[in-house]
Length: 352
Image 1 (cartoon, rainbow, N blue to C red):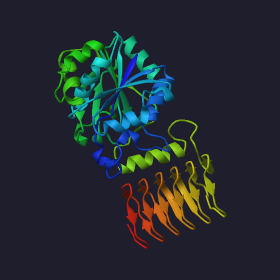
Image 2 (image 1 turned 60 degrees about the vertical axis):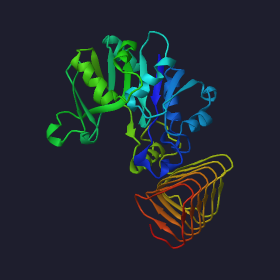
Image 3 (image 1 turned 90 degrees about the vertical axis):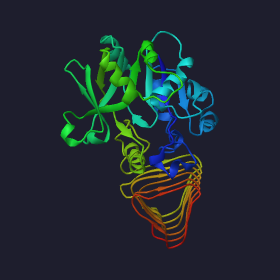
Image 4 (image 1 turned 60 degrees about the horizontal axis):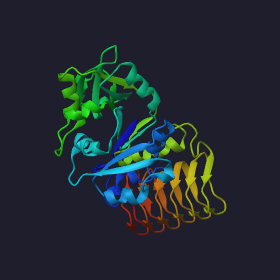
């Protein structure tokens, strides 16, 4: 089976972090986010992957190359103009070969999907199309999917109001499609899988089934969700054995720690060649990127400091994200919900 990952979006909800870097290349616990679905595919024996790009497409080629370093074959289908999820898939169809089904993934979802079980489900039902579903507490934020007892999809409701909620299973952003289904998508025009293709499959009575995934799932499309994904991984809630969990420290090569650090019960991940100076204090989950520096006596709680950032003496961070190569001057405080764009500078004693 081949796979397609849709990574053409501009990531507007993640600004300012995506002003300089496309969302799938943003680091997640000091590794590009796109590595997570790619490694998942490799784990399940899928080696041939097509990446559908638009926004800052050249950065993907530079960062990933042909995929050999990841044990994969990567190819790129570029859209000159955004074509939507369906249009992007159609644009990449020329790179797909064979008569087997195609796995399609939305590129902004962190999902511990059991791909092998999903494919088995699809084949056992002789489906034309299958959609992965997850159960959520608030389905009004997503595309609600109704299924019959057999698992057959019967209705879609996009971002329903509470009086329309009859189930809590929502679109997980992963699909298996038989090649003939791609013929429904018109070439060269914007087209949506969710709003156009899937309703059409219901109208034409295609064999369309919903598979409920029990693995970890997170749409990282907002600053809060991006931060929460870090905390979930570091806390051991996402993919089994985490890089750090509970009262622990994951220290990459070349990182240096000062004296008298207070980590309490924090889960801390420190990237390559990062420096943490004396008397720094940590709480919750803290991720420090490659080459970053945390000044003497600083306090960091539930936060992400991306590569090359500089925190001067006595800085305080709480539930926020500091972008790449930012400088936060001495005694500044950054409050929950804040996100600093790359190369920003926060003056001494400022309060954000």
